[in-house]
Length: 139
Image (tube, rainbow, N blue to C red):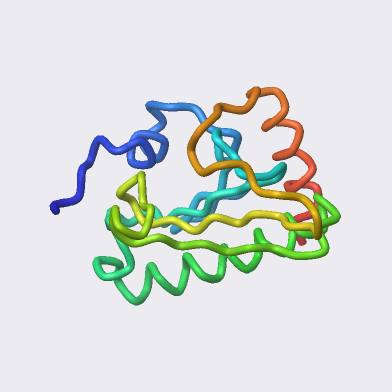
């Protein structure tokens, strides 16, 4: 499948759709998932147009991983999460629903189940509040 320049993440990168931004640099963007599986669920995307891990340049992959690590530390701290789950899905059979490569950073705690993936939109004000907590926790 060819990269769709009108996918939701490409549109966020172009400023056509809003997001609750957590972090941005020259190569990556991190923002709150609007359909989170847990409070604090954050997404990290490269600015390079790539559908999946197979299409991503080594340079963009390195930048994506560095930002994922940086933001994961902040999510863990901000959400007081004893654990974090990182997910990166490639292709429909793996559960990928937005075809722009991205990492999910999902806070985890024992005994708290995850919500179903991409099922229910969260209140934007709640997402903004989580984003502010995570921004404050960035080193």
